[in-house]
Length: 152
Image (cartoon, rainbow, N blue to C red):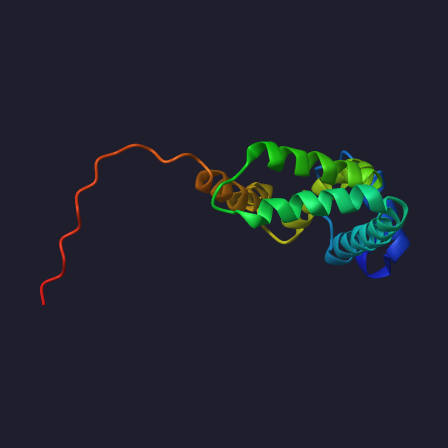
């Protein structure tokens, strides 16, 4: 489809039709209309979930606040409970996320190709996640030498 004539609804349709299509390209209009659609859906669904599921949302917020009380001592049981509560607080968003994950990924791969980059560059988005994992690993025992003070 000609990217200049692609409408908002047309872009959404193209991205869902090319659900499994990692080949070809996706123009800026196609990609960004689809991303805008996903953002708008997230806002609407998130608002609906906040209205319809306030007790679950309040429980998830309370657990998150408890985790923030003592950031030095990470309580993994509390962290796990907060994660489960947050997942339970957003069931519709989670379902929509699962449904739209693959169409978004294929659109991203096609957009990268259209911009002249390899789709492998998308792996760079994992760097912050991996960095977080490295920072929560336990301390590795090792011998350290005291640093010498700089000469004055």
